[in-house]
Image (cartoon, rainbow, N blue to C red; front, side):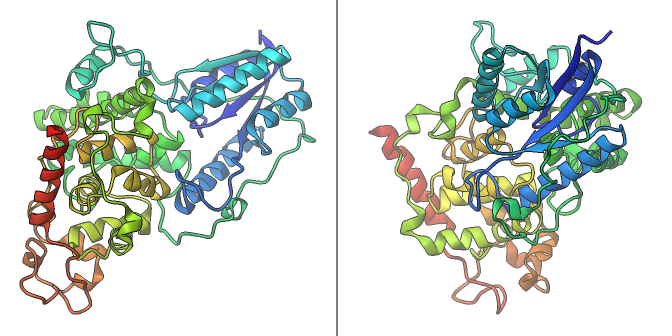
Length: 474
């Protein structure tokens, strides 16, 4: 028999009906579940999101609303401040309890604390669950019971822990009262935003499962060899789905386990395991953020705090060139244009453009981190921060400061035919790809309508080394 008459399920980063831990438990515990999503109330400008991300969110919410209708349920959308919105919803529904899945980032945790305080004040029960990750930040520790600061030992330990199985799809949630007030499924105008014009991947749970199927139909079986190739689909494209919760990490991990068990190919097993390691990287950076939340505001490595960086406001032309993909470095420009055009950038290229910003332009990673979060559909606070600090040489298990990628040689290695560059930088579509692998000679650009490089890599590399060495010596 159900324990409760009515409970609230607070949707957050779990916009799906399949393998949703809190929703599954709520459906089992109550006669009626009130599904609610709380709309944010910021307008026009935000450091952590932008029009492409919000457009994808709108699509996820529209898909979720339709999926709930198929269960004879309904998505309730509320605004006006999250705590007050839940307070009013409890009053409107006489709910006995609140169910939700825990958020790994500090902002989400702070809101959860406020919800628990509200529940104590009102006198109702609250139930929260692990769902966004396979292992939360305090589950994986070293032999001294301390958090790991290096990925490899973390991941080895991570793989030894049992991974929860995926639960099924909820089937019954009960009927939401017809007179229960709800906002409409939002559009960009709600946040005072105009369309980005980006060509986004389809949103919602069904689209996520379609991508999962496509990924395991051969792409991930070649992942170890192809994952650094930026042209074509060489990765799973599931990052945005994991971020917004249209698919769960358990579904992804165990689908890989199934594929490993089914193949007789050693290279395929290696590729699939390499893919699983990306889930471990995701949770490593979430663990870093969980234990060291200060990384959102400063360098993880204390020894690099106070290092000399240039400021974008002092070099606005260079900052604008990086953001708009007009640096004169083809691989950098291709990556930035792909980002703005699609809300996605291949991971190898993310490293190249991040090192270019921090090691060639000498701008602190925090500026690039914010720009990425405004555009990336898969922008995950922990992973984005971890990736940027890795490239800058200031983070956990970061690339050494003296390991500075050369955009020209990176192009020769990972886009030797220039296919990626030509796709995203149309000015270069008719150029010989050999011109993308070395700086142009003299004062002639690679193409008439393409810009000259805004800097020379070698002296900027030497400047970066000098700054790091001077700071270390001081």
